[in-house]
Length: 183
Image 1 (cartoon, rainbow, N blue to C red):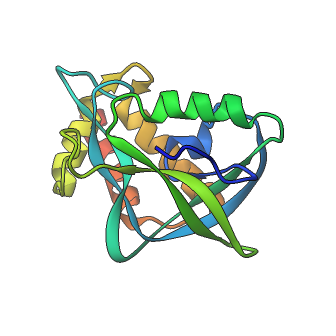
Image 2 (cartoon, rainbow, N blue to C red; image 1 turned 90 degrees about the horizontal axis):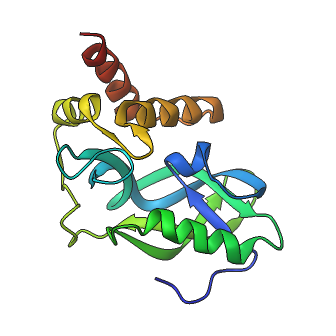
Image 3 (tube, one colour; image 1 turned 135 degrees about the horizontal axis):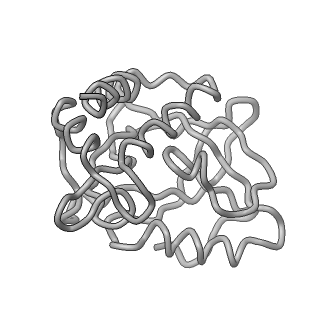
């Protein structure tokens, strides 16, 4: 975990922080993190699953030559300390994420230094690569403290679509989970 946060405080959102940041956002910009991939590679035993029936949540995983498009969210001035405390409580609940400072390319202007939460590949909640069908089966049946795993997926996909961000893997997964839930 970083001891100091960049100023102004920007947070890189690539999953639920895009559509449910739970902090005051002064500005939101579409942004790209290079060298990372967004994927369902983290077991969720709190928010979207349980220890008995783990779900899956998105994490940034290192990917040579890869990238992840998401949102750079600038925290409202004066709300930095409370936002940092809240986001750390939410994202670092099990220490599966590492907090890093990550430069991202803003779609419409320059680079922003952001705080980002990336998967710790040495943590037991890291799934490593899972086949898409296995991901779909897990997401279709899991539920946790913040609700159904499928709702997390669908909200993320819907928000990416609203932002004009294409993610073929998540689009396929969303369609497949809808089929499974309807069965």
